[in-house]
Length: 333
Image (tube, rainbow, N blue to C red; front, side):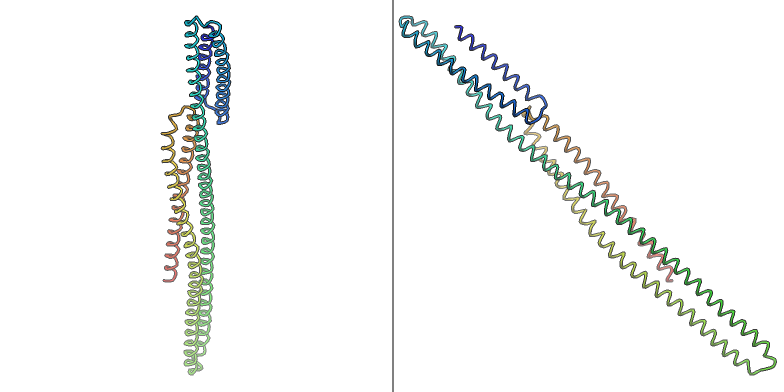
């Protein structure tokens, strides 16, 4: 009877230990702490099973001794038989709990491995997104520098055109002054030499022709120089714009790929969330994954904003190119 009471108390202690271990699983902790708790629980189960087996052997020895010494007392033998049956049932119960604990330990290791793979995938996605952001920033800086360079070259062309126009006007004024001076000189001698009139007309005609040819030649040279330089600048800018457009399309494809990966990651997260919510020991891991997913969504929103800004920069550059071409056309006309 005393032995049966001792076993009931051991069973209660075992139940308390199980509740304590299960409660410790519910508390937030690191994976190593969970594995350590499971290992401690297994060690406790093994010790309890060994103690019960030893106690069972002792009881069987005592029962055998009692049966030999008190063969006539059948009631005592039946009592010990019942107690032995209870002990055997308790032993089977402990064996089943040990098997369940081992199965839970195996499932927990699988869940932890799955979470590690998920975290590694999220880390890789985050690195790819950061690389995309750096590429976007570099592209924006290159566009800004290209715009500054084009503005500088446009100002240089405008200054050169102004200088050539001013120089041409000065040459024309100088030729006109020479013509007027020659005209005054010949008019003063007209009274004395009538035959000089035809020579003056011829000289004036030659000077007018020379001035007209000089003006036409200067204008044609200026237009040719401006067209040549402008064509080279426009061709170079078109090449740069085409290169930037290709890079933008590449980044757009990268962005779409990252968006698909994000959606797939979110779908996998929702599926895993439904399966992991059944285990109390994985609540902290689920919370961490939710936080990681929210952070990833925020970073994706930020990168989409940067991408939209790049598109706006490209549109602004297209508008500036159109304005530049319009200025060139007006200058030519």
